[in-house]
View 1 (cartoon, helix red, strand yellow):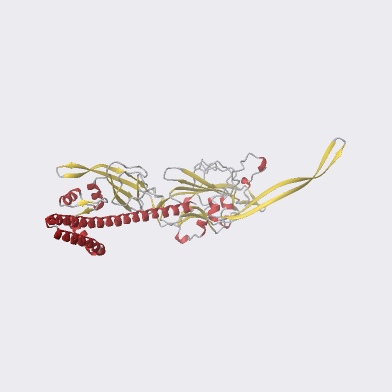
View 2: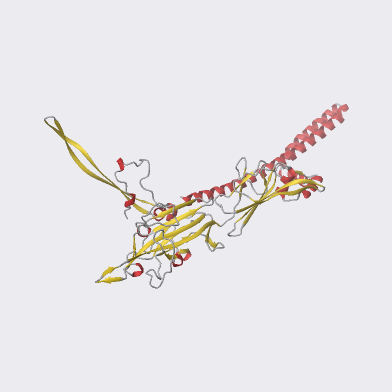
Length: 506
């Protein structure tokens, strides 16, 4: 098909900005793949001589008309591999969504398709959705298509009729509508529908609306019996309508049609696309780094849902107040949460995400502040009372909120003797050497024996404390590396999702 409406005449003398595009492809063309032909025609002249007649100088020119033709094929490589399997697809547009319009202007209103209607009992085609994981519906019956990471949800159209002989009847044909309008899509400023006008309006999470339209859709974009990919779909709410006109010639005189009728029809439906999983990401307010579950964000945090914009978020904030029983939890907030909002007030936060279409939930607990008891409460899940009992029994809390009990401290010493025997040997060697030197000095100077014994005891004590400190330091480094690795893994997972989302959008 040659798209005459897109032809730019007298291009070099027009007001068209040279940096503007001459033509823009549609989603149907890119997802289905199209051949393009661009023709540039112009005339040039060359002076080949001149002559003088009295005072008049005459130039002689040679003229040549040139036509440059550029052809190429363009497609969206992300959509190329998939083909439609109708047995594994969801049907959206068929006779159940077909109406005959009362008013041709605006394709508005509907009336019954009776027995004498030329469109009785057959479809112009069907719409399908493929590449999804599951489907459900809202309380009002609107279909909801659920997708997972890696899914490429696509809208397809299968043309079932010969446009010049619909339902096998040459008296029924699809004709162009040069003055069409659609009352539902008033934002589209176009009237020449051609043979079928397709509208697809997407409303995103922020209620932003964008309408793509495809004029002359049935003739230019669809092939009888072939599955035409119309668009790749992301999360959002969709409104789809296909408007077309039929010319019906039921009366003939001497073989010629007389009093033909032009009737207008509309296939329309709504559906939604949602992510089927339920992932919840928490980022540090200062560093933007991911925070693990049961972790600490001293300066605050915010919620990042990546591309899952339709999850239901709930948040509970608790603070610890003094009472006769010591510190007890006091709920300060329990309600809805919002993605991107900063939460910086001190307290223990429980964030819960729910996918309202699958009922899947994800819950995370984060502490904002630098109180050791609350760090331990979030890290271990123990109550404040239980933590206080352990502290009273000689335990202490490390930087990550872990509770180190006296028994654990003893295990540290025992594990140290087993795992760090080489280091322990070197330390003991130093201690023994120093002790021998002290004994020899004591033999020479009896009056200082007591003093040297005291010094030796101090040295041994310092060495033991040093060994314990080294072991604890190693444990903290191992825990920190494990924590950082977990954060890196979680961040890599989100980045992979973002890359998949970008490829799908492209």
